[in-house]
Amino acid sequence: MLLRIDTSSSLPIFEQLATQVRQAVIAGELTSGERLPSARELAESLDVNQHTVLHAYQLLRDEGLLELRRGRGAVVTAHAAEHYEPLLTALRAVRTEAAALGLPLSAVAAMLTSEETP
Image (tube, rainbow, N blue to C red):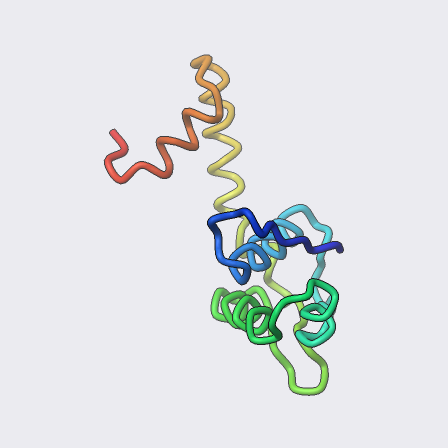
């Protein structure tokens, strides 16, 4: 799995990393028991501070997607993929309904991010 950062993004680097790991779990690119690079290795390869990577890993640990093991690094949890399955099911239904209504996904995304979704 290749992680990248976008220095022009308004998202903090730790959030960019966490998002990419989440997406890899959802897509099945990362599976249960798979180890991620150590924080030091990943920080060096991306030329970022090690604490930035640790922040991303800790966020994912708090979400239940990673286990942080001393000496073993970050490991994808057994239930990581299951964690998102109900949401993925709901999103498939939303995507189907949007298509039936002729509504572009960009409009759906705007509705999701709006504070005052009708």
